[in-house]
Image (cartoon, rainbow, N blue to C red; front, side):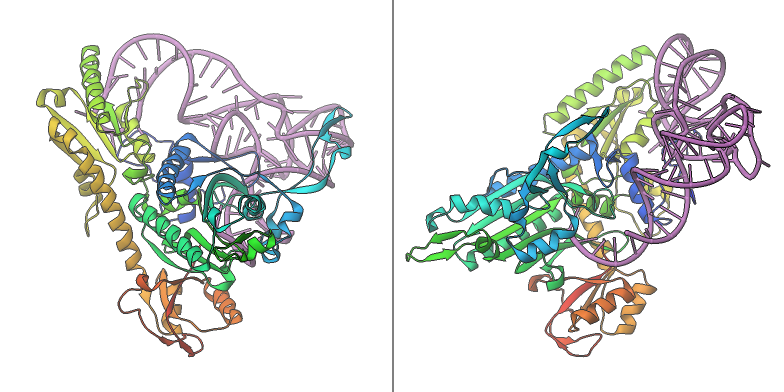
Length: 526
RNA sequence: CGGGGCGUAGCGCAGUCCGGUAGCGCGCCUGCUUUGGGAGCAGGAUGUCGGAGGUUCGAAUCCUCUCGCCCCGACCA
């Protein structure tokens, strides 16, 4: 990274000591803030391979929590996990035309299978060329449907409900940590059904699973809707998505669920014998979310002091920082800290006792705040005497016009020991609710019902932008033109129950004046 | 794929214009003192200056080529 402007960074706290760790304020450069958070919270690093990242333990721990929550939901809806190959024969990709075209520009291809020492350097052995090149999966529809062909003969084999946790590669030209990397981790569900209705029901069911996960677990409010034909998954008849709004007003597609019709069953020739004895092609769905969700998490909740994690995804719920001067104090304080840790753990909470004596307490405070640990307990000699715990929350709901100093004080409470421990679950649950509420208010504040092009322009050029509910009936070309002018796109055509009062009903297109049955959401997007 | 920027110690950078054999801050190691919001002092370790070739008595510095990464745009989970 160059130093062109070397942005001013916050120095955190009010301490006199000089801090090395610092974050560019959001108000100054949102994009740099995002990168600073990832680096300072030790979520990920750049790697030796362009466009690929190293997910560090703290970042991976968050992904593991997401996996657990999602996997439980997949199992609860009748799905099983399986694993399919990383490599897809080139000919498989070609079987579904639109699908192949959609991914053609971003495929990594394996052409050789051996290295050779030539003149003292390790090189690809030219004699080891593969008969058929292998594509590193950008998604697995083709290879999975090839396998399904052998698994499905009759309606009794349906529905087939499979999910896989995997990595995929899409050779992106422009990458951003978590949001768009050449390789990423995800889950992809691939299901087969005997009827269109059943498949469409599955598409909706999994969309609901994603939305529920986003809102309840990530504390990220989302809007469910259909993608426009232009934004559909390559090879799908319909793509549904959940769209979230980041703190800068931009939309982030956070999950997709596709109705694939019979496109892939025809391409792979997967037929089943129906109850009526007729041979029919199977109906398919696929759905996925990726490590991009970690990006969504960061950009929804975090602040200029670092990461903020919803308790349900925090790898560590509570960190205990012991405070002492002399050796006898140290022994007593650590003894108490270990007891508090054990009692909280007994409630199923993840508790870290930070007993490193190479760092001063202040340094630990900053570090765990940076990493987004929801609750910190400070235990010192005074607390032992009084029988209290000093409980500090990473996040409390801001009040209008509140000074930073006030806010900081409000985060810290001294609570009788037993009460603090008994109330920890509720405290965390409250933070979870508050985070969701704060995100929802933020989004709603930047959401506008817009009826004229003038207002549209004002919203996106002068008022910071956000989600615009507008009527649209323009052509794809007009859509593109609008997109060039305002950098906005149609994020989705929201489902009926997602449309707020006041945005319902038919109207006329803001560009062409042609009649439109319902509003769409337009926004700038990641 | 176009435009820009940057490769010097683990990290952030100075040194490059004007060639003389590499430095600062943070981190790291050791010791003592510290510890309720980023500790202080003393001592110590660390470099194929991205790579190759050239000019020169001498190259981090000048020239040529090359590789890589980051940022910004066109395309995308």
